[in-house]
Image (cartoon, rainbow, N blue to C red; front, side, top):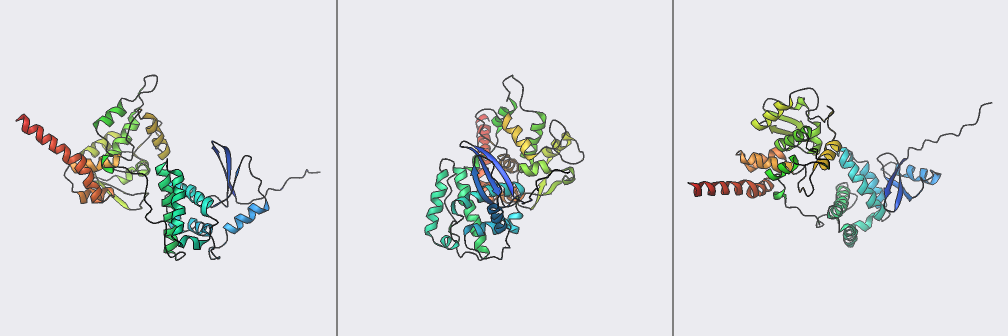
Length: 348
């Protein structure tokens, strides 16, 4: 006689657990990548009919009547605009969409057409006042969702639009200078071994000579590299980037040696992943180092300006505004030229 086997119920639910200072928290999603329908601390939750019913409601056709902000959030998650975002951007948005849902999800849609709700959103944002970047993520996510809803005709106004951001950075200061390269090259671990490997150096140099974001840098293949330019579709904006291959960049590419597949490789000869390269950079940074890999985009803009390109030409290449390029030029390029000119006059 065969023993009885417990039937496995396929629910399609996606469970995720996270460790926090308060202990483990479990999140139940209606499907992988879908909305969070349940959150509970402690033990793994039991999947019962109540949760299955919630998931079925979340999967209901978008033509169903929209009553709460959660209904708008569900529709936004399934929209082509959301699905067209880069995977890393979607992951970041899902976290904040869940936080929006936890705070405002049950509120009726009409509440978000009342300007008084703007104060509630700002108060919620301010719970992260000691983390300005996170605070801005909160208000930007609300503005994004409500702006999308307004475009879809689901609300008549975006009450979260234009909320003042708390995090401010002087973009003109975010450029790697000689002292930053020297600090990285001198970085060592506790045993005195260099943390600045040839593989990391090639990646950072390539970033500084192309202005590519980290995600595009690790995806760059030799098929994208032509005789006169690097041409590829960027992951973030889905636009075509055309990067001129000037002598310094050509020299670096030649030193790497043309091959098949990805241009950049790690110490094992495998293509870098975005998280892998980012992690190696973070470990190699000396204490107090005040630049990021993203700041190499500003370094590239400065490099182009020093070689005579106009602000408009640089802006088209790197995807920034001409105004932002002019700020970097004023801070680094023009200032450097004034100093050099002064030294030359005084030395004559």
